[in-house]
Length: 575
Image 1 (cartoon, rainbow, N blue to C red):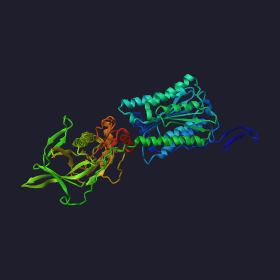
Image 2 (cartoon, rainbow, N blue to C red):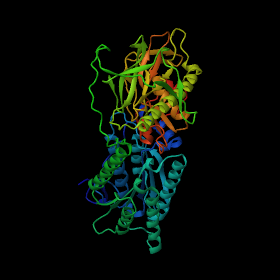
Image 3 (cartoon, rainbow, N blue to C red):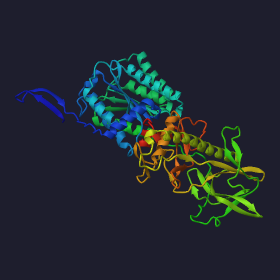
Image 4 (cartoon, helix red, strand yellow):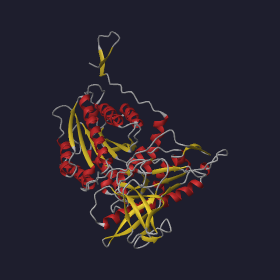
């Protein structure tokens, strides 16, 4: 079946014949695909540490790959490129969720007498799919299949990439995952004992460099009895040198089997990517506190509370001091204590929020003064260890203070960017971003200094705008403002702020987990936020606490962030 015969004019004598090939149609390329391809190319050029995976694929293009013995394809070479496009590239694209934009790279090296790079660190997308289909028709297998030169090219580009990533401050655990795929239809042409040892040394060197970040896949195309012992030995060496999930597959001469092998590899790559982006669960053995939430609309006097009046002081965080807590005044001048309700009114992933009141003693009677504030504490059961609690307070205050420092600079940049000036008929202006100040109220308990972390209460509709592991709130009902650049959603400034921080800090961190209220009570709107997270490139010292999702969080942010008019107005590069 699928054989086309060319005959003479009498139709009785065969001139030649060939197998009718499977016709894989190219993908339609929309403007959106072109734009995303352009942005991803720029990211892979300027910020390739955002890569999640890099597949380096060596394809045999020696003369034997011209053989026309794979069902459905005119040659082994066409089968290799066709199934690579259909069952590896397209398969992974189909497995992606919705508009998920991941930074995955593919390099293809052709192997014959020499090794040559067909495509280098290109985005895994439909444009690459079409490029491989075009190459499928244009490839011209020739001469010998020397393993070493292609392996050396793969080793050189991976080594160079990893060194640059490490020099940029990326920790070994946050390196991208590398897939080294070697497709061949037989033994190497450079097959002396010394040459074979050099092949093994290359694999061993890559394994020692990347450890569990490397997987080696050997794929043999050829009839039963074809000689793949050396290709198997390369995979075995990888398995014995940390890359334990490496494997060899003999796909034979069946296009279905070759496709299945690439499809299995695609699934493995997707699983690796998912594991790389998976955020670490809290490994703490401390159970969560048992509590009952405060009933909504309850009068404050009805809810039970605890009062503290012994040795009460108020501190704010000052990182410029050796001891970072600076003594300050109370919110109300006659304060001499405070009360905290026993039931929280709010619960987050890490913290519980309680109503908090300053109190004053008036003629022997304790009375609450001023409006209520918010006291926050960990939702985990914590031993009576004030050192641990102080660390919790310090991390919270450090993150919030750093976020405000960056927000202040961002607000200044926005105010000085002409295209973000309001249009002639617009009475409002771009909303500044403000993070709440936080304080620690200290009190004495059995001679021990204890403390509560406290900040002002945010009035209005509390909204979580983005998260520290890729969550983005996308709604079409947000308030808008007319600027020189056009109509802009107010929330675009928040997402642009996260992006701007990444660029401003030279790719070292992102301020995210932005949550709070849009305060529209004044003349101009203001975003008042609290409890942000900072995902940092190097979190070895846990400077920004347990909500720092590190490089995983940065990659997840980049996978869901869509640049808006504010990003473009600020001239931010795509991520």
